[in-house]
Image (cartoon, rainbow, N blue to C red):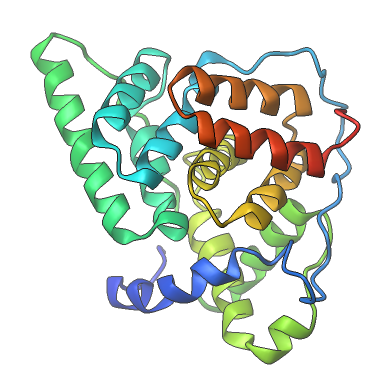
Length: 256
């Protein structure tokens, strides 16, 4: 059974989600700060990101800014690097929660144009796969709560969620349940997209810093995240690169 969340429900929740995405970093929220989650094996700091994943942050950054020419180029590069069509779609759908429905809708339209142009050039991109079923009701809440805890490295609670319990519900059931519960894009790729989008937007530095920590919780290394900032700079996103480096320095000052 798939999620019964309707487009109307999502539109109503979106305004709340934007503020709620600071749950790890909000001063005075009482939320648990994200700490590195235990892992079966310590990631090798010298292992570079695969080309497919290296291409994700520039897509997120261009989408968040509504820069269609740069987005088209980033999507083209990402597909050449091995992103499936479903990967690209999932990235742009997920990022509505960070950049808004208008940016997401416009970006999906641009992806359609890019794919059409590639087909006309004789390029056959891999379709990828659709997500598996996502639970509903209490099972969705349980899944979202578990996902949130794994990503943050600890249960997330505090006065903020007592003050506005709807945010806690929407985070757990929608963002971490409906979205992060979709299994057609891995969490590292989802975090790379989020980091790219947040780095491009001024005024969300606390959230960017939080997602740098979450990125390391899901197995990305500081060196890999520095390479993401370098890629943003190389793609003409100098301000996004600067914000990414500053957030990473605060999240991992040791560089480890």
